[in-house]
Image (cartoon, rainbow, N blue to C red):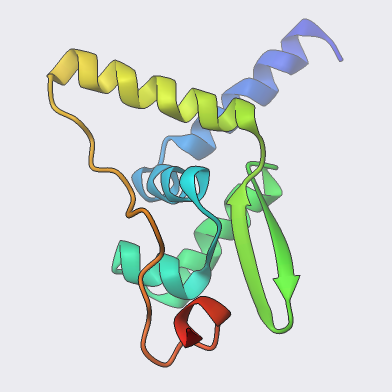
Length: 120
């Protein structure tokens, strides 16, 4: 890989991250694994919209998934990404003096959701 191609790859990742909903998804997934139904609830967005954003993040290697029966659970791909997200949050906190809202400690229970977390 050349230096130029490495910068092109980095720029591509930054373009993907330059989307507020994708950043919010990553912020949630950096703290906890979640299925699409939980992300829909937290983001107040439709399943197709959330799935599309997850596909972009997955194709870029920023999230990974695991299947549990018919359900797919997503999480941040690695600790370097989590560290980068935390650094961005700290920078914004320093600049604005205001904390960014954190993701809930645990995914909400979604009525009618088939995942094991909601069935408890």
